Length: 393
Image (cartoon, rainbow, N blue to C red; front, top):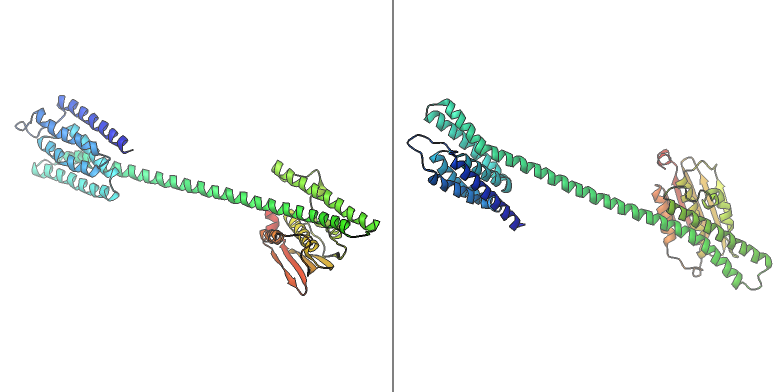
């Protein structure tokens, strides 16, 4: 990059020298008097000095300006030349643009003062006001204008860089949002898969184990167990098809052709009946009039009851599991009470069920709690039905 910059500066210096030589050949300069007219060969010295200074216009802009200033002063003393004026203006421009911001501000004040000094010297020293105005104007164009132009370009570059950084920041935030959305979707699908597989396969495993392990099981018991196994298998497959349809179609219509695959609170009775063991019964109590529930609330309530019953089926001791669902104007309240098991769990667990139930309640701005309560294990959840959530759901 440094080599490329040096090469460009060398091209600028060569172009400036060639243009200066061309202007000198056509007498592109002025004289202060007829008695003071240096030869073009003498004027070539400031031109060479100014052109050589341009070799450092970007790599060392202040040094280039320091080198160019004496040669420009010498050219002014001999009589201003258009070529040297343009080259010195470029040196001022480069120092203001590639140097520090404070350097540009200092150069602006200096060139303004110098232009006013030139105007005063020409107007007062020579007693010609018009000459003073013209001289000051020319000095302003040659000295002040390049500095102002460089400051404007610097400000434009600063704003462009700020916009570029802001765009990069927005892109990074968008990427973070995308990753968060992907993570949230993966967590949601993990909850759904866990609830579907854990409940149905747990029921299948427990009832099939009972058929295999219980000696002299009567025909009625075998048929009841096989019926539970069959219904859980069919329901599990239906819900899996529904989830696969959602993933494949990418919209909310997945599984629309199979309404039975979409769990509803009206099916809690069947769910509770099938969550039984030989030493564990289950009862369901409904309080209040079921309102028209948002789909998200109904699904979350069903899954919480389903997971609580699955945990009871795997871990509860002998007795009865009581499920109570209460509908109020503002919420759905769920309580599942099951006897604490003294022995080891009949099926291994990972703890994902409690995490999933809590996540479902929190996502709906609800409450969730699970733990021992008077010799029984209690799962409590409260899902709000306020107007704001109903509208956003």
